[in-house]
Image (cartoon, rainbow, N blue to C red; front, side):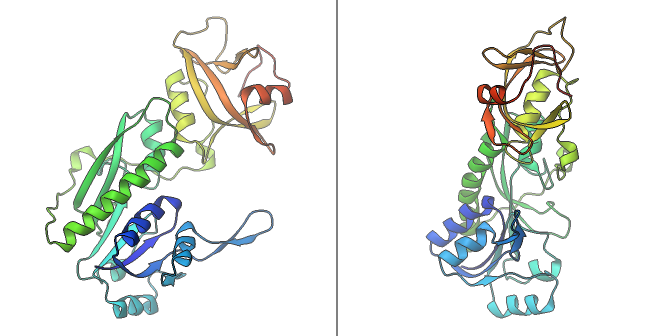
Length: 309
């Protein structure tokens, strides 16, 4: 099978790797142009580019996906299939070129959690199950006919980063199986059920501030759903503090403590919420290193009775 693979993020690497390992002909890898990052503005390659360079795969980094030169080049390559994982929205001029069309891997059980941040929102919303789906691309984002789905359980304290890695590996197997079905003309597509649609919009920094008025479970899900990135945060006396890891230690309200009040700094950093107590386990003060709670408390003067805002 002649495949053009399109991807950017680390989530896409296992899918490209498994297709390469199973000797599908990767006639081109398409990813984003290098971008300046960090304080030194050093040019940074995408994880997909790094894989392509390491394995000497043909590489394309177009600025515009609607560029006619890109479309012409793709037509000249005569791919059987385009496989898209964690990339940009493809225009119709591109995804209709291959003889078998183009497929995408999405990190949810479509049509649930259509959008840019399905892993984060599944955890934030307290789901106990999610999964991955492969589908044929159509013009409307995440709406195409389903090829395969695979379900994955979400554990009580699992973070978005941990779930990301599980779904990336599960998704790679699903991509390989989907390609094999397409190659063997054995696909049985399934239309998405519109009655169960939900959305997972992109998350911005302004969305990441902890609301201590919510329930302890909602706050815990919020923290782990944004960990490690973009990361939930709170403030203390004007200083921003990122929270990477938490644990529910009580489901009973502290009657004498307002929400967000620090109630224990001896053996742990415990904070009162609307209907329980939450332990903050891994934190990062603005401009400092990420630390466990005990090391964090040694470097920041916090007293019982004070509040996070």
